[in-house]
Length: 485
Image (cartoon, rainbow, N blue to C red; front, side, top):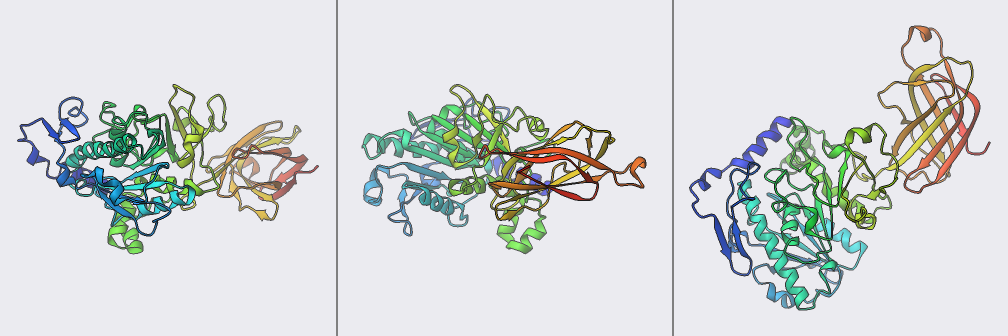
């Protein structure tokens, strides 16, 4: 699969680029939009082949308006004629406005996620939702599509500024631009031309030709009052990623470490057999890249908050060093991230876990087991818990994963558990453990003695103390502990 992905990326990057090597002009100007140059920083070591953006007649950008009044019948506006907005869009009114922008090689007709995202937004609030279709300019070669993003961003800014000047929109603070892949950088180009733009959400901002470039080339935190970015398919080691690992906003989220998303391990053949040729190829090659869209879409109306933890690195997060909301508060990944902004002047990186399939959001729990003092010998093994609450019982969840832990008298062991359910009011918890191979325990089943178990629910802040009172748990068996002593 990685070989297929690498080959596709090389094809995308360099197919057709030879035709531009003889280009002598390094600047082009378009009426109303201004001039665009291939000079530094748009030509650099990160983008050695830089081309000029194509004309608006070639790109043929259109805007599709969804509102609660005309949800089944969206209205389309040609971006070349922004002055016609009130004629074409009679349902457009002075209310918060959301923009949705797709990336490379996508079209509104063949990719349903844009309409689905618009529907979720309208379920949540009374918005103008504008879907941007720039499929006339986002095809092969990738170098040309990357250049065309500058034109589309300028077109969006032209319309937004026109609406503000005409007092159809109250302020730029009411505008939120949501862009996936190349669409995230389009949002950045729009934002640098809109004074006081409220928010940009970058959904796995494109990596090729943008990673580690000058901030003027890519999405960055100066492009809006609040910029949040979600990274789901970043390059790591020898694996090619379609997204960028470069922090792009005030708040950058790296779910599952930012790559190899759970549930995205299907082979090309299996995905084609399951979903057909076109969707199968997309699901196989672009699965992690598209997860950012799915996470954001789910986050809008889900009761689960996509709680994310500030952390210095993925390694620290995996080691359990960041499972608290301390000096820098936790945040919510996705639509509601603007309610949990980092402190002024700070840029924060967040990590979290998700599930492998929808609903993706997980609830986070810290389980602390206190072992009783006594004469029982230290043992090693793996542990699991089953959480019981009012009218519900979870399945068994591993505390130790594939690792073996040492359990010793007087020790306090802390574990982190992610569940798809909000356990609510915990009434009981069952604990079991299994010894690891050892000559000393080969012909016997040792026991551990538990003084108590504490459960902390990060989303709600609730704490539950379960009494152990020195109860013994033999390897291979389970014991249930109650909240009341």
